[in-house]
Image (cartoon, rainbow, N blue to C red; front, side):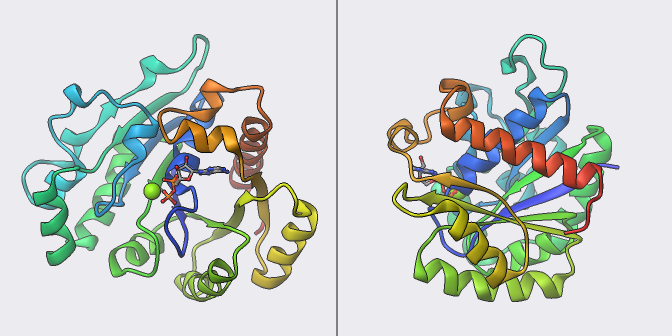
Length: 259
Ligand SMILES: Nc1ncnc2c1ncn2[C@@H]1O[C@H](COP(=O)(O)OP(=O)(O)O)[C@@H](O)[C@H]1O
Ligand SMILES: [Mg+2]
């Protein structure tokens, strides 16, 4: 049975889209059938990290939410971009960058119940092992309702007082939603900080396991979301940490270790 995984954070710019894309890629390289759905309809971006050729795009999630197409029309198969020997598959359902679509959906909202049903159908139709949802930050209604149907919630946090306070609110809501597996990832951790101590502090504060701590990295910042860090710099310490996170996630979910 495929798993729906929401990648969320209280604040924007925490690295969700880059993380989602890299985790999806690495899970596909490990033989899993994976799709990424960009539910951040107000500020979409994961399609850039996954390098989707815009000339291919005829329909998006936004079109589906506006009643202009079926969700299945917005699926793009990126599997041919995977390295030789990768046994998995990778699909992307992007959101639209059109101002018109963004403004309309932001002001009118959308039918989350219908989307949630479609997500589960998508998992079946594509025989997915994982459907990764890149989300809009914060506590908006649509994201919370989609999180509620997720099997796994990955909460991304930076070592920043604003993030800690906001994440505390987010975690209370997440715990009420009853998502079966909740894990945390610390991103943009300055190398001057003690990562192990930060991990302990987050786990003691929020009572959920930290799957990894990713440094605030000059090379990642310089890449500027123009592609997948794990592909550009596979031997880099950040790529290694991303691999550790994917392995831990797959082990927890597939081995069903309690959170
Ligand atoms: N560990 C990191 N070190 C340095 N820059 C990072 C790191 N993680 C993400 N970034 C950069 O931060 C910016 C925001 O990342 P993004 O994935 O779009 O965040 P979000 O989706 O949470 O808004 C991008 O320019 C990205 O390259
Ligand atoms: Mg994003």
